[in-house]
View 1 (cartoon, rainbow, N blue to C red):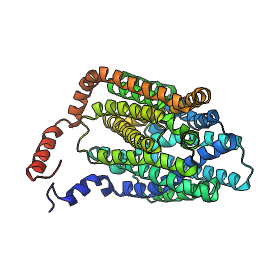
View 2: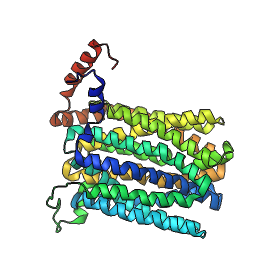
View 3: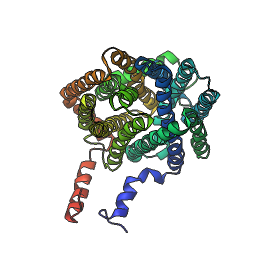
View 4: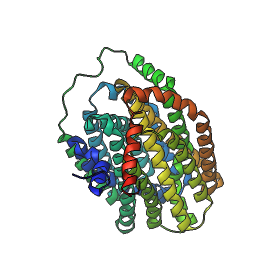
Length: 444
């Protein structure tokens, strides 16, 4: 039997969510599918910039692809709390596959226009508005154990960022050698993996979470009151919304840095995007190794501060090596911030409201990004991409500082929830485990 200090024990602890069959199926299928998704992202950005040469259009396409998440977020949350999350995911993946094949067909034809990309981006945004909260809320159903939920969230982040690392790198090579159309086609095929994994799951039939006769407006307002009335949820979502609004659009402007600042092509863009993925992957692995969610409230603020600092230095850099290093830091901080926020929100949310809470999380994380993409594209077109990101970095740092002012109140509100959930007693257990590791001379 392995002792806590032995490598086998550590790996089993790190991958403990994979002991659950449904999550294991989802993890394997989604890992393949997400590589295709990131290939499509880099191909779309490169295609838009190749067709238009416009920084503003890059931001506008990003806006169109994500604004449905903001507009439909609350409604999607009610849907997720009412209907089967498993069925919702099956349908969103099937429609996403068709969307990718449509994009590929247009690109192969040689007659693709910017309005085609815009229309299909809106469609994908509508799909994501329902897919993302359903995916997040379905996690607890796949692992069937609240104690394993933080590990499942962290492994999800690891999966996303392995794809973020591989997808742009592969996509950059394919774009340079064969064109954007092949990226879209491969993405369409990759959806088969996650669809098959979902269909192979054994999901217990359950009664509808809400009666059909329940009033939709009442459920919408109930979700809003629950989110706005909880100090921890409100503070976490507000900081996430600000960071997403002013910080996340940096990725939309990367094609400009690749071509104008570093005088490169698709390979350079792939390197920049992949470096972000490496940093995010490291962050996700550190999150997966955590034994408790205690301390994540403070980590959320620190990650936002580091994220803003990374963007600021990247914006001022003209050296490719330094810029790649800053994007590593930015990716690390972004993933720490997102995964920590996700973990706390899912842990403290009432089960019957989790779908609506995660819809607001999706609105804050993905729904605010389109406004930032539009604003960032406009500022970059007027004053240049570096100056646009200087502003982004400063605002993120200021938002993080404001969050720390309210952190003591957030902690006071979280304490009774953690006691009720039995989380606080884990402090003693974590200290004991640390003592065991230290006595064996093994680094903690």
